[in-house]
Length: 129
Image: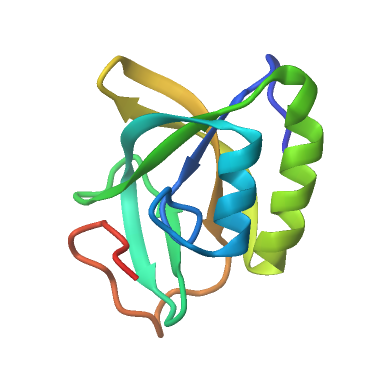
């Protein structure tokens, strides 16, 4: 998985890991991190049926909306290993700049790596599943 020159202790989520989700992995995330607030990055959000997938594109007209979580440097490796397994091989973990009310924050997020032509775009950029 990718690494960053300085420890990134933020995670941006936009789908089944959102705070309102009752999914077991969302509950796990809430237990092992702290919700910071809303954020967004330029890109497209796709409806994959049971869950969404995001593509980061700094030149995109649309935005992907979600939430930021933070966790300690001590917890980062263990938490990300669990999330890597959960996200599987449809996604890759990457650091992207996320716009927040306090400016840009570099965050880990999971980006879709499969072809997107078959999936509809969620025009609002917000997952409501």
